Length: 197
Image (cartoon, rainbow, N blue to C red; front, side):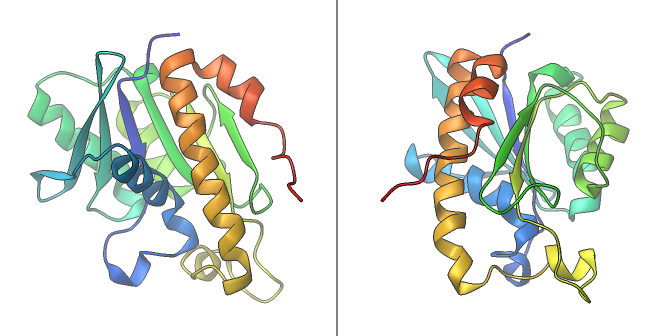
């Protein structure tokens, strides 16, 4: 599989959505930027990028300033600025997932959207499902709460330690994907995290 050269953390722009469940992809990308002393730069009014050098190779981190269901359109902006089409297998997408319990992660080499609007938009834009994704579990909505309300709600106070640990672990998974490949990262990070005393 080709080496990853673009990492896309999904989320919604604006303070209203900053710490919501749907913004886990943003949180993970932000952690990578902070950890490595990088900075977000404005490619256009529609997206931010950060350039991360790993083992002498440039990786572009991407955050859209458009809404989740327009995530694919931000890739079109990147295509226009770079003048060449993105190769889907070089793109890693980081997003939330209601089908996984809070704290669990799952890496896949390709696949459908699973009803995730951001993934749907990217699949439509790339005309391909063949891109790796790192899915971060947020659990399913409580009874009486719609999935839309749930993903746009902030994490509960008691959930925050689990979320912080998952975000940190997601960055370790991304580093593994970039340096050792998707297959190795799947073996290492798709199992439930070990509980600590």
